[in-house]
Length: 307
Image 1: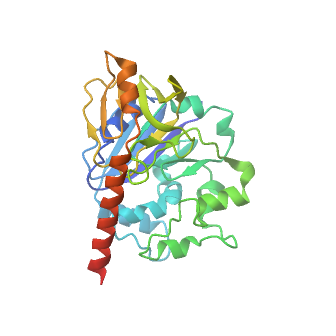
Image 2: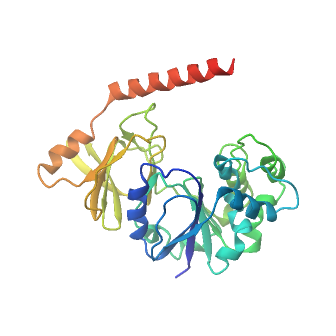
Image 3: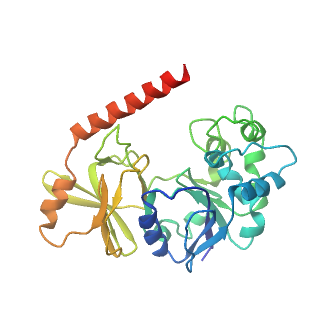
């Protein structure tokens, strides 16, 4: 079995979904999760924690390059995600694959999707919420390779602006892998990137098309649930990503079986299960309107402060 480590340089307050993330990470014991952090992350058998201040991590990153880089705030770390294998090579040298991701999500059974057949590829997924890269010199330094029409890493690493160097759609690293090394890429979408509250307060999977869903996590499995023509349907997921949902409350007492709903993470119901699931999957148009107006007001206030 090929070894995998997912790297998390993380500084500041942990997201509302962290406990859920941790519970699902522990259910994937054959994958390691490595933190460089000043947050309260407790080590576990597959959760490796390097307690470090952001200033010290800045120095580690700077030592990897022979020009002055800009890493002036933790949010700027997203620009460096595809360089972690190069910057942190001494920490990950024993692994076949390294990756990066987010903490505002829940994993299913990762090995069910990252099979030996899939791990023949060099570059998997390519999204900021989860990506794997083969741990070899060519792959670890591909972010440096200059390709016409794509972002230059030196420009991304020397500006204070966020260039989305690690993401699709901005001529960054993922676009460069897909467009120039497609034979080395596994670009399936077995995950659910959930709609933002202002787009749909209820959960819609923007990657796989199901609407008005909830998620069930049982042992090491994750399922997306919906009702179609009155019948309940399930689909297994690699992971689900819940961006811009800092308001989610964690009310779980038993992490062996729980539900992720639009506003809270709760224990799986014991009684009237289908009725409660149907209620949780309902369309919430009024809440969507609320978050649309809230976002518009915040945007206008922010714009007025800039004037």
